[in-house]
Image (cartoon, rainbow, N blue to C red; front, side, top):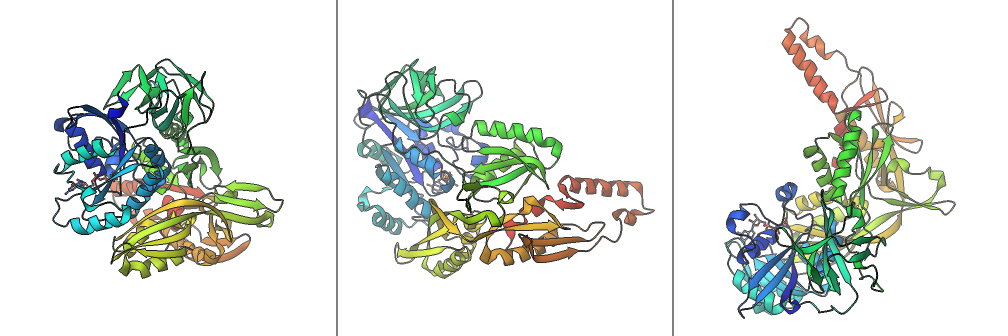
Length: 599
Ligand code: GTP
């Protein structure tokens, strides 16, 4: 691999602006893959769920060969980046493995929040940015207007913006020329001690973790003894190579190359994204900068509906985490729900994906508790503890103060929705910062929010109050002190630990009231009266009562034919599957998520 004829780049875009479609076109023009192999599916997104959701969850890399105008053959390494804010650290590491980025903007949509967020990440990584306007085939495209937005955003000349239709294949040749001409070749640092940046890893059941890396300095040879900086583990490089659509083993990977490393790592958690690989015997003195130990942002309890499926759930989580280093889980018990796991996720989307995969791919029926963030509790004796489960909140008398994570958020919208968004911001305890005009009608609004206020349904709300014309992006900015209290729910006097939430004091009363009302609608009548109470500490702040059931369901069938009776019984059994016994009260699964759709 001649480094002067190598180009390492990625594609960044707001969701649905056409990243995967463009990637497919690149694979096609470089004959990495032809149309028949592609079918209708997008090749870089190879998980079913990803296809369905149209979101690239894990970054991958693919090597293409391209004969340029100058008659020379170039090696193009396309590194795919996940397109969601939950994965922005992964994105930043993928970008760090590149010299250039294609910034795609949909000509019918214009610049959106993630366009800007991703652009900033790319600028931080020092990348050469090639602006690409996509979907110019659509009659609704506004080529001039969107070009002006791009010019305002990155200060390029109008003729530097490429116009393509990834779908129809228009403008792809020019784009290829621009990739060769404008993206710098990697620096040739072969003479330095080895430093390779890990930007992704996948799990292969036969080979263990397959580590995707970019050689920044030095040379990696097959059979070398390598050391991972983050955990100081030493391995032998059993196999190295490059990725086309399949792995292509090589003897050597040198500075500037992108490839993979297989070295009998059993757990992907030992190959951390952002870590540096060096030689065990002649190590580099310093790792590459930018490594972070990613911590989950959102936690939720996962419990099997049938308690005898606990082992199945454990095995399924184990399998899922083989390929997902950012999924963490520890066993926990709930008085209400029995044995389960407290799971940590990078964000809500990540959480939904895991839940869906557990149910769909592994067939375990699970009950999920309301997601929460991790609180930092400073105790009166000055100890600091981290609380990822509301039921673990210490007694109020032991608490000095509580801190919660904050994010800074940017929202791009049309100026007519500013009022609605300000209102939503206030409801969610947002601190409004300022608004800038992007052009005569589009604005970018800046806020700071408690993460806990936006993890539930903020995005959906934002979309609905702006008729879809708003996009958002956020980044974590640290912990701040807040007046937070634990709100408990009691059924006939017994606290249901899985229904406890941590909420700001100013909202506790309203939440308590609405939650009780909601639960009243969800919990079916029982043989006896059920009192639903919300309480802060020992103080009950709200109460609802479900009156006792009058007659047995079977009474209806009295004298009726037997098959109807059986049907009814079966139906009841079906419903029971998703019920949990809390003390003497049967609680349906949806009750544990009731807080999610409280307005
Ligand atoms: P995420 O993976 O969700 O980030 O989306 P993406 O950016 O990869 O977008 P994707 O390639 O999946 O394209 C989104 C939609 O736009 C798909 O329905 C594509 O068929 C369509 N699309 C992409 N490029 C073009 C184009 O040039 N013209 C037209 N008309 N449609 C396009």
